[in-house]
Image 1 (tube, rainbow, N blue to C red):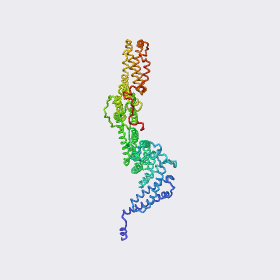
Image 2 (image 1 turned 180 degrees about the vertical axis):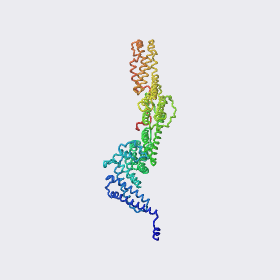
Image 3 (image 1 turned 180 degrees about the horizontal axis):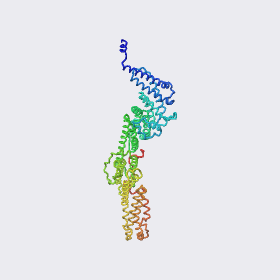
Image 4 (image 1 turned 120 degrees about the horizontal axis):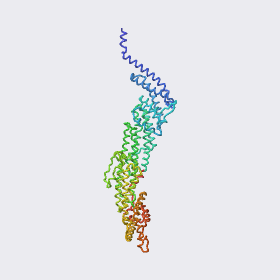
Length: 623
């Protein structure tokens, strides 16, 4: 009885017996796991520096990773069931050895394959998957990695295996074993240097705003060109490829892949997208620099959807914000220059040109607008809310909607704005025409300059933006100006002849008509010989029109009355009274409108010979 009670008194309760059994089980499990894991982990000891697990034996590499995971699971089980188990110490030591080996393998694979991206940048259609959290470890992603990074693949046992998949396997193992930070640190150090080095070779520099302000435009423009060539490669190939690789390698952990990509890409991306903002704030911006501003704006705008996907993590919001800030600053700079452009047209004080030719202001503005029309996309964004507020003295026909389109569409927004700027130019030319002091010459000036505007529109992309109605309206205006010139400039010649050229009149009356015709024709010829019509086609049309109109009246009059007048002059010929035969009239007319300054009767009396150009620089200099 005593022994029984004694035994009963000191024996363990039922739950203690169960706990003991569990401890034995966990110890046995740990012992077996340690034995199996130690066999392969010790085989690849770091002391053997020449060994490379994943390159030397892919089969054992797989076994190694499985052993590490089994060891981790066993340790977790033992900690849960018996936190004081002495087997945890050797297990932890073995795990340390294994992790050091995996760190070395991870580093070696990264170091040996620093440049993962192929030269073509891969398929941009796969951007969608890089921004999605779903199926990051799928076979599709693996196939995409291999297609983008063919140099990562090696051939072992007739099977093509991606290096990126090796990295992913190691990362999965280390993260599951609780060493995700160590793995991420190795990855960040390697891949960040790759990004920085690649951007350096692309010519992207980390320069300060003060440095930009001190640069002359020629040097800054070189850097702008380099940036424009680099930004698409940087976004669509470099950052895009790094995002895909990072997503693939760390697909097991959203937090690790975000922190990794942020660590390797954020600083470089901010450097890349800060440069356009610095250019937009350049204090020496002028009209001819507009097109570089638009180039920068357009480049970011085209890449914006990719930027939003590639840098879609919350921790990368600063990158997206910087890209948008740069666009906003560029937009402000472009708007300021457009306002300056319009103001410069209105304030232009250059004098009229000799002979009613093309004014330098007309050439400058149209060249500028042609360049602007090539940027209809960014311009529509920039000028969307820019309204015209100045009343024009010109007819309402100039303000007709240039194209039948939705008023809010980009093409219509640009069309209306360009139409307005042309209107501002034509208003200015209309004012300058009055300085000639000779009404026919004023009309010739208006016809020449409007014809130049129409020709430039017809020969450029402005034709598509302004539309056929605009062209036909302004072509009709050119004809109207030229008709006024011909009517007023040659009225004295036409009124010197009777309305009916073949009507019977006295020789004295005929003589008087010939005298008036000769005097008026000669005076008009010498006056207009210094005038110019630069467009050969328009010049020929005007000559033919004048010849037809004058000769249709003069030739029959000459044939009917020329001999009578000759007989009135004793001892004289027709030439003494009739100074111009019809053929002579034709020849004299053919000599007009080439801009000869010989015997000009207008250069001294009207001040039209003063030739000066606008004080602006040519837009071509900024291209």
